[in-house]
Length: 128
Image 1 (cartoon, rainbow, N blue to C red):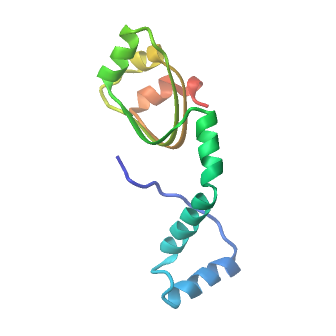
Image 2: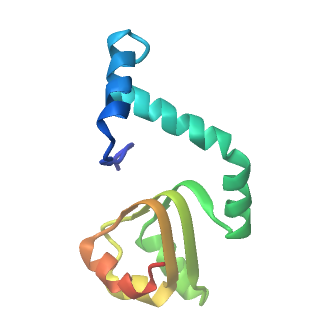
Image 3: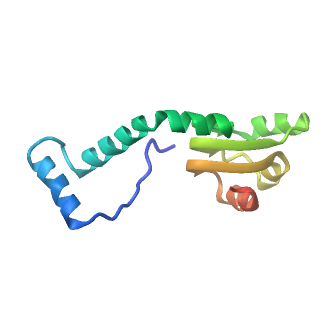
C-alpha cells in the first residue's frame, strides 16, 4: 500500500514564484515541502469541521483493510457493509467481485481505494 498519493495542481506564476523564493531562501527544502506544509496547516485549521463530518457520516479516518475472511464472516452473519473512509480503503486480492457485491451495500472513499480492478468494477454502482 502506498503511504502517499500523487496530486497535480495548477498555480499562477506569481504564487509559484513566491514559493520558489521561499525555497531559495531555505525556508522550505523544495516546492513539495512547502505544499505539504500548507496542506497540513489547513487540515489542522479545520480539525473541528473534519471531526464533525466524520461523526455525522460514521466515517473511519485512516486505513481500513478487508480480506476474503472478513467479508465471508459478514456474509455468514447476513450483514451488509456501508463503508465510509477518509484515508485508504484496501481490499485484498483474494476478494472476488461476487463476494464484494453480496456483502457491500455502498462505498465512499475520500482518499485512496486499492482493490482488484474486477472488484472496483463490480462495486461501481455502489460508489458514492
